[in-house]
Length: 149
Image 1 (cartoon, rainbow, N blue to C red):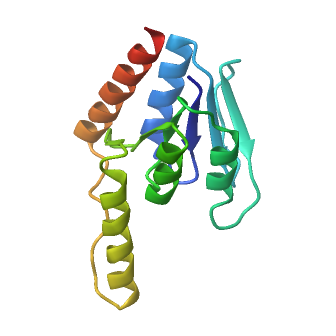
Image 2 (cartoon, rainbow, N blue to C red; image 1 turned 135 degrees about the vertical axis):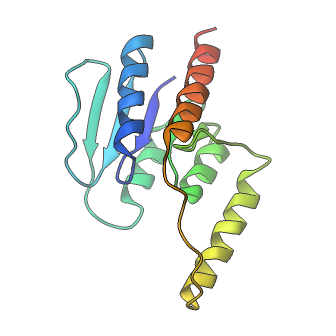
């Protein structure tokens, strides 16, 4: 299983969890972003810089990923494409996107985006606290253990 990370808006603590997990399990991890990112030296870790632009990193990930790969993203449209291609999509808060839930999440996202465009204040995501980081780490560990077996 190759791990891909939509790294443009990936929180630093989640990136660190990914680094440690990839090195511990000897899994390939590729971070994709349109800005430079520093990664620890390891032949399991790679960084791909893509040009700036809407959904350029998403398109790169979808093109390069294979069925069974894991993609870490908070981007619901990207998660929907990953799931449709047979990949596994995991939110930085530890929520797994599935064929059963990604359509509903995409519809909710589109509705909220429409409400914001009409001027309604909808608030943002809750802060990424210690509990959310732990949920992500646990979900990632379960996925990587399942891939090893």
